[in-house]
Length: 179
Ligand code: NI
Image (cartoon, rainbow, N blue to C red; front, side, top):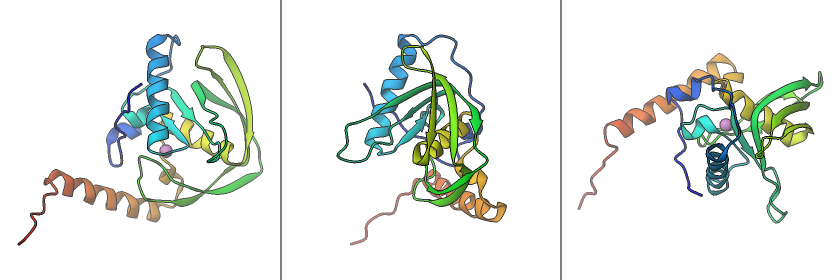
């Protein structure tokens, strides 16, 4: 396995609509395994392939708590087939939006159909953190980042900060130490 680089705002690739995967073969399994390693090392509880610059409909998730056995989920071409009318609010964060957290309201329960790491068709029903995480990651496959669910004012404020940081990096971000 290999750790991959995670892209962050304002990288335009985060706006791409990702391509469905035709066949779950060894090359797809390799990407999924690398994504899982990257996610664990970050550390994060979910990762979409576009966050490592791969525009395919692939997601890894593990919402197990520290000290619990690991419970990795691999989702290929995930689709939300049902969402509850009841909603829930979670404070969300994103590896592509480092150090920004905000409340997002989403359906409290969802059903998701997908292919697993072996290409087998599966369906999961989730609530709580997993329901939120599934929706957050599936959003990424359609070019949607969680700040897109915030008010325009809040979103623009966050974007401005990331554009500024990127510009500073572009200038080299080199500050010589005096003395
Ligand atoms: Ni994210």
